[in-house]
Image 1: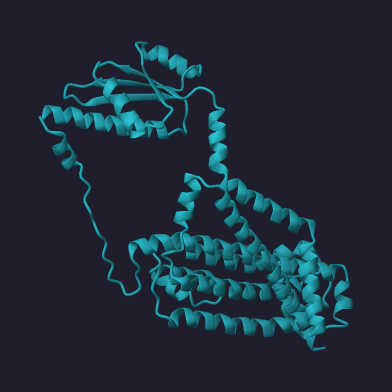
Image 2: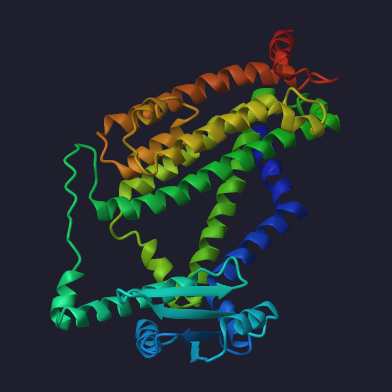
Length: 419
């Protein structure tokens, strides 16, 4: 075992000391702190923006400006929007908009049925917030006009717009409550991303590391003192441990960032990601499926990496593996809206899809215990079989040099490993 731990330590420390690893880690941590302080940064830029936004209003009816301004102010008391009535013609105001002297203007009138007719003019094609606010305010003003015509009191108007309470009662044996489902959905989505990117990143790292050692002829020296099987699994565990450490560092940085940047936005995000109503077993399954998914794809990556002699060929060789994890993520993402889809149940028992698809179903449904346990058992058996087969390929693959001919080299590697 001494040789195993030497290679394990070498795989861990070699990658941990590379500039690319350090730079990536620092950039991600910086991005986490930037994201957590984004509301403050945006507020600071808003304070440097100069004059507040102004909306000029042409009220042809002479009755709509005051109630509109009052409703806009009541709907958002903290808004810096300035609403100003003007007697300028629409043509003059349009020229001012084109010359960017003003941001926008609103023309109001009443037709023969006392219905508001409004035209909002602006040069911005992406600003939808102010038009929506104006539309909602005008709807309120319109309701007031019609209420006066019908001699309705404010209580009667409120009763007309009273919200209907509809309670969803899902009697499915696997369904969770609506509140539990909403909280679980975002947690499952985030953890799915973590599993997806970790598997792709660290599995590719293993394949590249093996190919690099082969291209530099270091492999010939290594296999003279340690068996290829020990070398493969030491690489898998070493880089896997490094990945877990990196993810833990990101988690700690995220916790500190959101705790030290208290604001309404971060408090809202923190409450949104609250784990108080999440089943603890969901987090346990997240760890289990992450580890099993990593070892499954990492073993496959080491196998494929041993078949190439140049690092330039690594991406081409691991492309089938990448397509598998991408397909798994697409399947899992398609079930976020409806995790009870029939094909998801069958896909969750396919070992290369299980880490993401089964975790989706476990997180969003009340499954019988045997289903996730069966998925875990299938993955363990697959990892064992793939490790046994991968060791045979790896034993011969690390001794193969020359151009790679895709997956056809597996047969040659097995034959070479027997010699």
